[in-house]
Image (cartoon, rainbow, N blue to C red; front, side, top):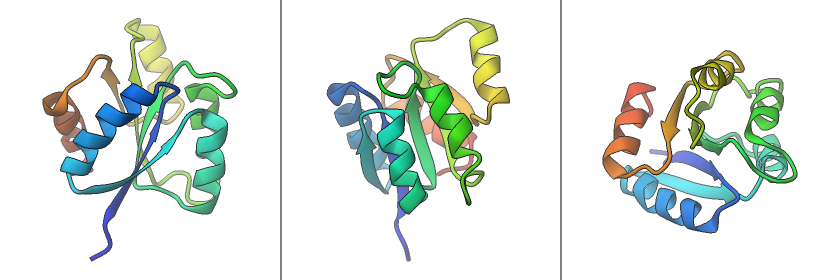
Length: 123
């Protein structure tokens, strides 16, 4: 059986490390990217099943990445979870209309992330 894959995109090394531990515990192989540009280059080569995506990052932010991801061949496939401190309803609606499957509020823990993965059908 091929392992499930997840790309964690966040400019914070600490957030990536915490998320990696949780996601690996759910049985995923995990790759990391520090910004949307790095993530887009990764996805052009290997499309992950799930993407945990930060909103505010240097080089390319999460919204720009998401819009570009969805235009790539196979880019409609990954479940995308925005992982953000953004709490305004209009911003969350913007993310969902741009193609995000759900969002996770920072800070998060294993229980919250597991529940969000389950809600989008990733586990």
